[in-house]
Image: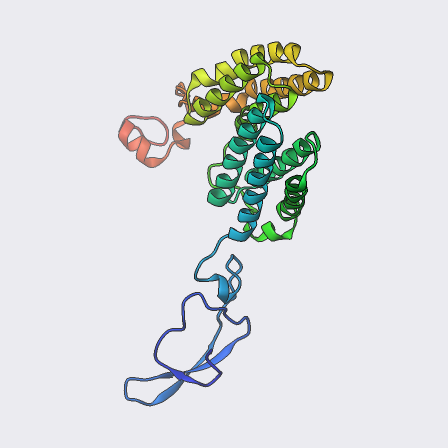
Length: 300
């Protein structure tokens, strides 16, 4: 730290906490004499890191690490508690969705990724309710509870982007991709019928192709995925499973038919604009000079 009036010849350490109030500094001149350079204001930083300990290595590492650990524990409990294909598909779906959410938040710090983290942890808690309780089950529930508190609470606030990125994706496009990735988890919890497994595979492939910008993926999300979802809903072994699959199918279908989803895979092309006549006096002088007319439209 540099106290007021202290002479110094090297800049302060980059990344250190700076003071909000003015500080009097005495700089060393070339002749070895000190001279008063007046008041220097060093503004405080408003973007993380906000403390010196976080300067060397910054990021929401412990928060994301806790959420990832909770989701891995949930998937492990689902795989170890029930060996049926239903929970295997649910664990795979939870892993896919959680991977996208975790990587998305670490890379973009976007609000959509944070909401996806909340959805993943909430889905993990819901799936644990449907399996028998064991010692590992209680540990997974405790971890999911902590992870949910971190995901919705203040620990992630300082790392969440408050302003939209320079070129944001439309919300329906993001929701469509996340909805397609959630299909395996929903199909697994609903019973993992053969129709549900096929619906899950097609939905995941469609989500990948949609993220790559293929127009065919959008049409698959509009036609093929909903059709397979209807078949999977009728093939579900319970009323709750039918309702869940039908809800996901209807929601993803609505997002797929949104115009913003089309703009994501089919960029806008400049439209041809027919020239419109204007009065000569309204045209810039450079344009009139090129056209060879004066301000009244007479040839030069």
